[in-house]
Length: 265
Image (cartoon, rainbow, N blue to C red; front, side, top):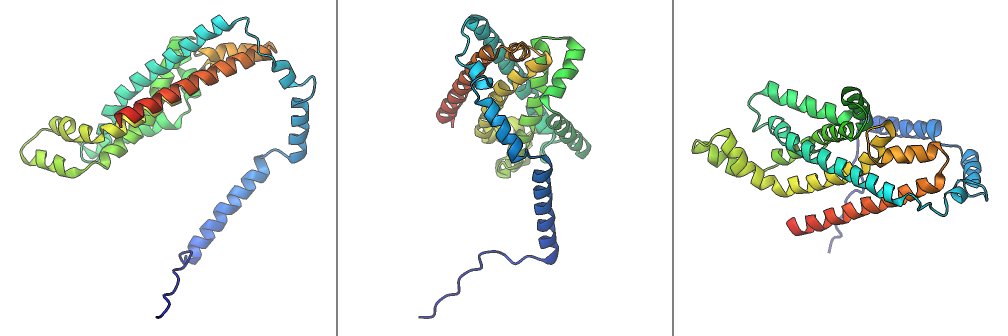
């Protein structure tokens, strides 16, 4: 029997491709060398961290004196995340429909919708929080609006991709019998994309819970305000309590989201 030749482990690339790979490798290496911490500085920092009078010693044991106030602020953070994610998902669906090739009424509308989604996704939620603080003032309302805009960009992109990948057969069949664009969307597109929409929505909620804590650092409500004050006043034991309770909330939301996905999908 003639032995078959082994397939090549790597595809042969052109000179331009090798040059591009070298440029990418050079960029990665130069970025690490320019921005990564030096090993000696990192070692000194870690030694200060674990010293008898270091940060870890000041954080333990956690301060439970204000646990009731922290729990209420955590509930406010959860409310911000739920409200912002719900509003963002509601507005993300029409934006995604307008950004989809088969469903958009005009190419200019499609490009405009894609530009809006890209803009909302590109600008960090902390920047949106500062913007809405100027508009509506300090407090959770600014945080909700910031989360809403961030989720329009996040969910809008994945909603649009799911609708782009949907089977065009049922859509063409409905279009052939004279169905309207609205009828096609609600009869063929959304039912086919519902599992993807559900997963994206739950991931958006998880992301909102994690992000809502950071919004308080700029005054947009939630537990982030208390965390910033604790660090500013060197109350590291109280800060540890806030961090641990926030971790518990995030884990609880992730477990609940995973359970819902397992039941619905």
